[in-house]
Image (cartoon, rainbow, N blue to C red; front, side, top):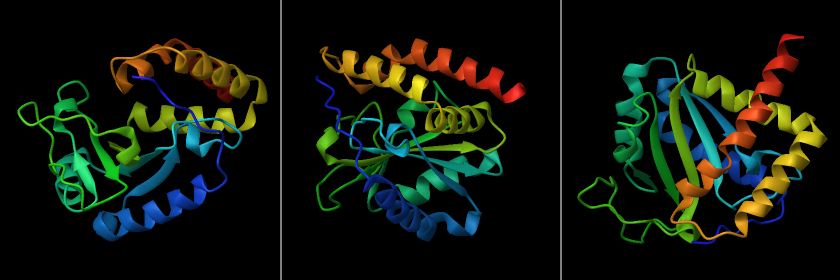
Length: 191
């Protein structure tokens, strides 16, 4: 599969606010923190036109509650990733609710939801986790560092020219660049 990157769209933050409002309607009583992360949250950076959203919960015991509540309507829950990352629940927000996808995708019924049908990728994690802290640090650092934002942009553009088995393979290929930038961000933070 090819990864298609779009130029930064100033509408992405507005799309996030709409998605945040929808998410708050489903799980707001659990007092989550909802953050826009990933490339669509960084002005000037090209991205797959799919919002990355991180929902922070105060207790890890709420992970399954959040996932099961959201797996109704416009969100598809993928518990197949729970074994790999037991502290995170991953969901896909759908652009069109009336398209028939299972509300929960397991090994037995797994189908690849085309990127064109995805509105958002949602990561539910505890707010006291490294995942939460690292994603916010990376986002905030790239928002403020033109040099590192340009480096990340270049890597993404180069990788988008290749064929990938799936989106996870593309994401893994960015890991060394992300880790390098994250280490720099951590050093800057401690100065």
